[in-house]
Length: 284
Image (cartoon, rainbow, N blue to C red; front, side):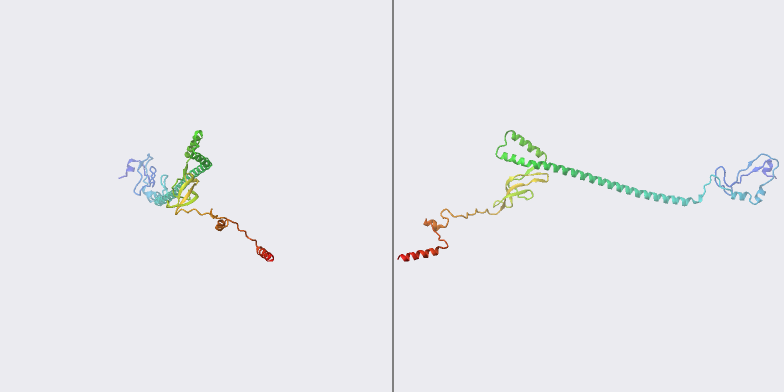
């Protein structure tokens, strides 16, 4: 009985390639190409067993077949390559996180420096303004003293009174404050003692009289209050005069009672007295 190839009378072509040209995949050892009928060329000879028996035949050709264009070289090393890529990605991520932390720290430092700079500028601006206002008001303090003395003597009348009140309102608006009242405790930081006395009516050094009020702008003292200070203690009795009394003469009470003058002899009076005695003896 003949084979199917011989019955049809046409040769049968079998694809023994190891790589499938359509899919590019490696064929298994049991897979084989499908039989394709070819054109009739006359009686054919069975070539199957000759190809199989020939050294380097179909089996050896299938084993040594080169890889097709769709095959991936080094497919067996996919595991180590993926591990290297994961390690490289972790290293890059760590470097990016470190760089982000550095940039964040730089931004925070710059922000803090700018905030401190702005506060320092505002503080300096306020200090300069306060100093300028204090310099202007210091020059007006003597004028305010004159206005106060005129008010005490009831001379602040007419247009001068309106001008004085406008000036006081302007300096008050700029922050000028007067301080110093009778009876307040003496504070050397804000008071200047011009007079001192003792009084049993006080229990601590007290300002019993304000001679000139003090002025300040905020915490800055333009002029301390000039006051008279009294300390606790007994008042001192007035001292007696050192000169002679009304009933005494310049040389004592005896001279005043005798009503005469005492003539003092000079240092050479003893010789004169002895001479007068000798003269009287001759006369006798």
